[in-house]
Image 1 (cartoon, rainbow, N blue to C red):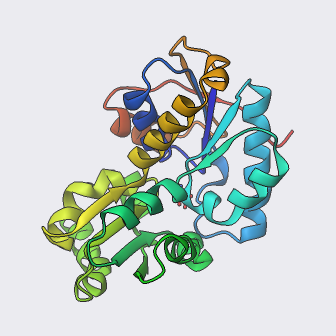
Image 2: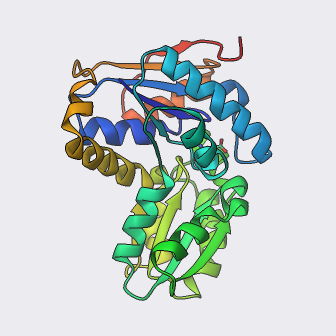
Length: 263
Ligand code: DGL
């Protein structure tokens, strides 16, 4: 089974992408709805939560973990890779790889939560792959609540996006990384506001393709994963907002099972 975790249900954009790219694979998903958002928490707290979430998924039979949450991947990715003896794939590296390949002029913008942007992980990873690139980062703390409220077409959301994207636009960026689970749901508003010539990188699809590549290169390991194409969605709190956001992502009702990961 492929284990995927996120701070909430936003990471289902990654589960959805994995389902699209690898429809035969079984997924076990955990969304830490009770403790969301991670984006405004300290690195130490996020690391502790990330370990608990990983252990929950391993107990459920996951043989590979995807950190779908950009905030968790930013501050806990290295720790999880060191601590657990299973392959760990996170959302940041695949998005960075794609952005550095696609960017024509090396002017790359990244939008994300406070935790993600403050970690500077995108700057570091981009400069490792493309040292001459310039990275422009923008924290967008208001976007997650807007998505969770379902404000996907509201005037206020468009205004806030214009405000966040303007400083990036004036820098003539040619690539924009959606560095947060929730932002793919705002892509229809982001694209026209950042400008037609800008390549938008959706990290959820990037991670699904990375997983596909990883498994194709390791057929023996891939054979150990179940192919019953079942998906179990667990959450630490079964709230109405979580149910609505999950339904918005999959465009169908999603069965969320409530569990506790803290013992
Ligand atoms: N999942 C988080 C991320 O991708 C967004 C929500 C949160 O702040 O917990 O950064």
